[in-house]
Image (cartoon, rainbow, N blue to C red; front, side, top):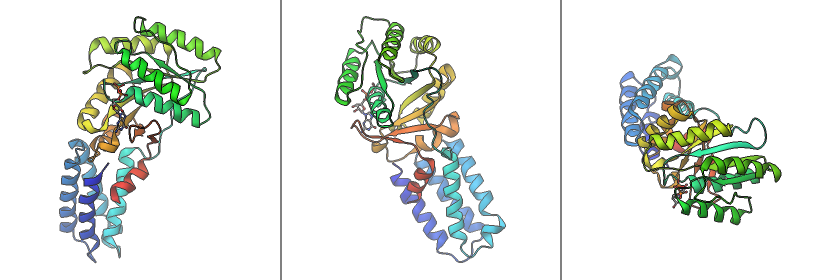
Length: 295
Ligand code: GDP
């Protein structure tokens, strides 16, 4: 992720750092390049506009202009603003409330929901929790089988869902079973569709009302860029999400969704998927991401 942005910004900063003193014109020119680089990385245009305005205002301040290393100060400002754009600190899963805490995974078909459910189960187990997986995508029997297989591989209990059952009944029965087995987190893999539609949302709302999840995570494909951002807004409006998991960041050279989604939706990215393997899930750290962008 961020390969091209890293390269583009690298050359802007090289030229800014190469000067002893910076004039307003140098900063103007540099910011034009930063703006182009961010737009090319598929960052939402409103986010780019605000970002560049903030960096410019701070860069034209006295501490930078009169400093001995003004170029370096500008780079530092860009780093701080990037970190702030992505949310400053990483935001943990919300596992509050009675046990088992319910986490709903929602999103479009193909975003990586089922794979991510397995990844989260492994992550939670490594963190000392006792997760329980619930395949609730009854419209895609392959998804049920896929999650059962993943659960078997990592040795996590999974509800024996039938595609003929009602998804809410599956969730309610799974919660009972998880309680009996002493599990503390219920991970619900819900149905996805190719597009956001009313039937899908109505089913998710019905599950939310009865299961009272402590966290609802939208799973979105980072490679879809600004479509991922739009989709997150749509899910948030209808369902109220607690955070986002961006998948396939290993295949996303641009990084636009990672940079804009929090600022546009107000919801934090909590995890990123970094590959197809079940262990390829990382906590999202805004400061580390910003460092990666600046290289
Ligand atoms: P679902 O329809 O949302 O449940 O999606 P799946 O979990 O079936 O995933 C769809 C495809 O995306 C599968 O081929 C996964 O292996 C792949 N996938 C999921 N997450 C990642 C990721 O972080 N990186 C890569 N490269 N592939 C992923």
